[in-house]
Length: 340
Image 1 (cartoon, helix red, strand yellow):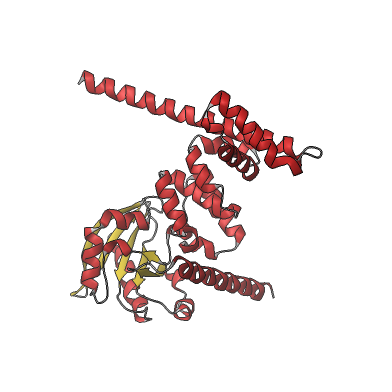
Image 2: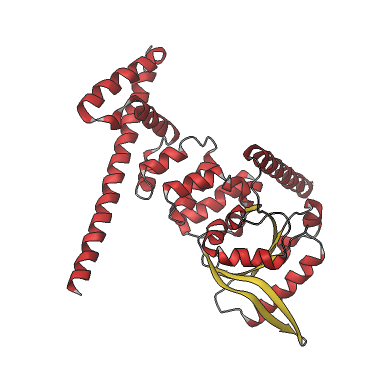
C-alpha cells in the first residue's frame, strides 16, 4: 500500500515536471523565433535572411546542441510568425507540446488551426493522433466547416472558454471506417458486427466523448418492437445519440423511423438535466437535396455517409471542398433571403 502510494506521488511529480519543462522550452523556442524574425526584418537584412539563419544556427548548435540546427530555427521562426501574440501562446504551451505545434504550424487557415488546437486539448490527442486527424481532413469532414466563419469562431470560443461543445463540432461527414475491413457486398448486420468488434477505433472516429451504451436496443410502441442499431451517450452534449445503419443511399422514409426512435427515447429514457436525444443516420450515400428539403436538423437528426474503403486523398479533398462551398453558398443565399 505504501509503495503504491509512493509510486503515485513520484509519477504525478514527474508528469508535472515534464509539462513544466515542455512549456518553458516551447516558450523559449517562441522567443528565439521571434527575435530572429525581428532582427532579419530590420533595415536591409531581409535579403540576407537565409545566410543569417545559417550562421546563427552553426553558432548555437556548437554551444547548445542540435535543437538549434537551421531546420529547427526555421520552425521556431514559423512558430513565432504564426502565433504572433504571447497572450495566445502561453495558455496553449501548457497543454500542447512543441511537437504538437510543429504539426499545427503548416495550417494556414487560422480557424482550421484553432479547431485542431482545441480538439487536441479537449480529447487529449497525442502528436501521432493529431497528425492522423489532419491527414484525414477531420476539419473538412466536421459539420462546423460548412458554417460561416463567425459561427466557427463562436463555437470554438465556447469550447475554449466554457468547455461547451456544439453538435456542429461533434458530427462528421463522411465517417472513415476503412479499419473494419469490409469489402464489396455486406449486410447491415455485417456492418454492425464490424463496428462492435472494432468499437474502440469506431469511437476514435466518432470522438472521444462518445460512450457506448448498447446495440439493438429494443423499444416497444403499440405492441410493436423496433430496434435501435447503436446507442451512445455524449458527455459534453449531455444527450443520448441513436445511430441507425443503412447500407444504401439515404431515403426520406429513414427520417420518420429515426424521429420515432428519438421521441421514444425522450419520453422513456430522458434523465433530468439531459438535452434531447440526437439521431445519426449513417448511409452508404446521400442526396443533398433530400437532406436539405427535409430540414433534418429541426428534428435533431444528422445524416452522414460512411466509407469502408478510403478514396484517393485528392479525390476526398475535392469532394469535401465542394461540399463546404455548396453549404456556405446555401447559408449565404438564406441570409440574403432573410435580409430582403
